[in-house]
Image (cartoon, rainbow, N blue to C red; front, side, top):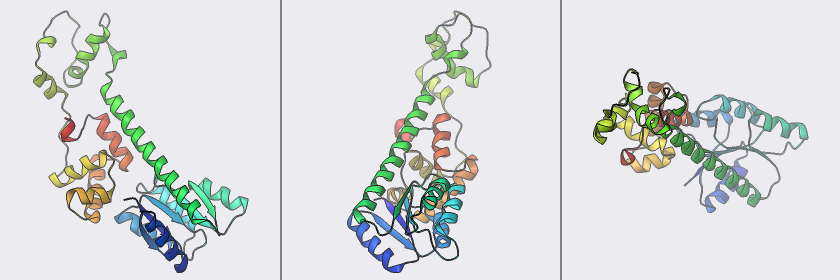
Length: 259
């Protein structure tokens, strides 16, 4: 179930939106300020944000700006829902990083349509990133083959060149005589510097699961998932989930069932 975060200082509007979106099958959290929303992102980022523009303490524009600077919020779909309908306001919202801008008063069904479109776009982007990274991890660097080496030979010897010094090309069949088990050992990536609990979260993240889904799969709380994820990002020197997925496939890490 996708989780929507509503950020608005109007309690009545938040209640109406919450009820309507829950009837559409979404899990909804609501906060009355951008500052509360930023705190929530540190513990359990939602799948999409619907935010007002005019709010006390911090307006929606500044909230969106800060969110896009935060690794947890760079790619989260963001929709402004505001009574500020001037062209300059709408342009400013998109320029800051919003994915859509809907004017108040609005039709609830239109908001739902925009939410569904943004979530589907986010899903396609993530799936395509994983597909491209999987392809990249499987395609050998054929352009680096030694003189006289065929494309097939280059593909067979590529993995061995990563872990062993290069040596002059020969017609020896030594490489062909290696067993599949030996090749698998040579191709295996370095062990992850993670605890067993962090490793379990790592495999879930690179398969595209959200914190809520990971929590349900591993029988832990979303807050614990976020804590493990923060440690994983720090240990592997990456900034966000997308970079973590890229790191995994570029370095040959695959979920245990796929190895």
